[in-house]
Amino acid sequence: MNFSVYNPILVPLLYFVLLLLSHFFCKFSGFFKLQVAAEMVPSRYLSLDGFRGVLAFLVVYHHLIIAYRYHFLDGAWKIPDSRFYTLIGQGAVAGFFMMTAFLFWGRILNKGDFGAVKEFYVARLNRVLPAFLTSVALIFFVVGWETNWVLSVDFNQLIEQVSAWLALGFLGAPDINGLKNTGVVNAYVFWTLKYEALFYLLLPFFSVFILRWYFLVLGLLVYYFIGSVPDYFFINYFFLGAIVAFLYRVEWLRVKMQGIVGLVVLLVGLSSFYVLSDSAYSLVALGPMFLIFFPVALGQDFFGGLSSVSARMIGLISYSMYLLHGIVIYVIFTQWKSIDLFLLKAGLVFAIVYVLSVCSFRFIEYPFFSKK
Image (cartoon, rainbow, N blue to C red; front, side):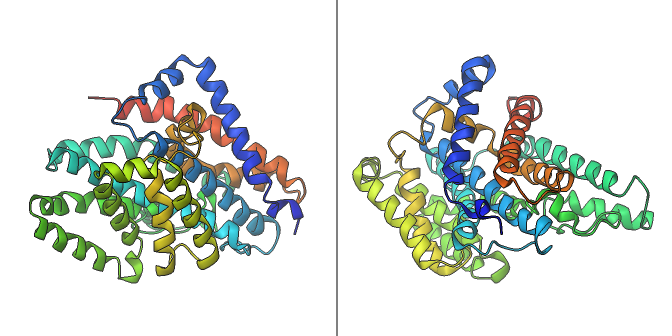
């Protein structure tokens, strides 16, 4: 294998490229300058805004490694041979799950109740669906291009395949119109949306348990045992995120986590995650992932790196980055078939993903979720 593919120097190097792009957009785009500045309010979790961008970046890099193997080596779409590159991708997904639970459970704790259910779901749909449907449309376009716009399956079968792709990951990622391994087109990323959607569906029910402490304990135990079912193991990370939302309310913990103690906890979490875990999707990884997320959620920003304007700019467009990066990787790797120059391809992927995500946020995401 090309050595540069697994060269760890590329990870901070390419992240630095994204920081430079973010600095450029925040400096010369009035819209994005205002968007990032608007986050500078006491109610925002600034370190999480930057952390979200780091997680999105790691998912992209993880899939770059997998896609390189698929397109140029043995045609297998599976986790990288490198433990490090496996863990950064899986750990990033776990971090997203924890962040979702932390933010929404914390919102309920702050309000004392769930609030209006209808308004919640309308807001969630406005936030999730526009970028999702845009990415699906791009996937369908790529499939049409790859199959020469010729119908290769029964029309009813095509409708079933297309419908499955519109189901937020609940029905998997079946091949469309005979294109083998269609899921590779977007790096199979929709599977996580199923768990996010399940969390949103269950949240009003579990919010009832906040009213009495014994109901709360019962609710969290039920939530935890759902996570013991193999297909729903990821619920455990939502459970941990909810626990951190409670801990956030302890002021002395926040003070400690924002200082050197929090930095030590974060570093212990990172090192133990790498040493102890072969996969983030295992029980042994839950503890280290908690130690990583806990200090960041409580304000540990790694010497200002997570709360910087550039880092938070990446976090702002992270949802579009997540949905679009697989498509960009697929197009570049299928059209540029040379096995060499991984660094150049990776740099091109990140640059295109970043610019497309900026456009997606500005013209697709923002017009919907900014509605009152």
